[in-house]
Image (cartoon, rainbow, N blue to C red; front, top):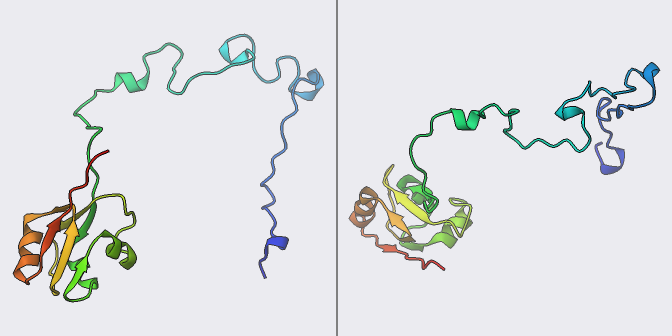
Length: 152
């Protein structure tokens, strides 16, 4: 039986540290495996990520295309067929969707899309709706309410 008191790490899990600078007979004496001269042989050597020794770095060599907005809003997507998990004639908001396991984060806005077929009449509160989803919900007698969250 596997318990905390009898856990063991694999045989190769603990690698011994290479001992350097202990004479020429050790195989890692004198320069201690760093070679002769150069940037990597010095103490305190640090090279920032992406530095290529003065050569134009790859990140600057490749072409840049397009634009990414830092203000883009990411939505949690829910399709109509998923809303069939809700009870008939119920009012559904983010909290109810979180309890049902349809969404995973309460602070991220929700968008309802029109994929699939809705079979139940529900009143739903969300930040955004697609036009097809809006038509499908209202066709069954349900109501939609768009939530507008104020930005701090």
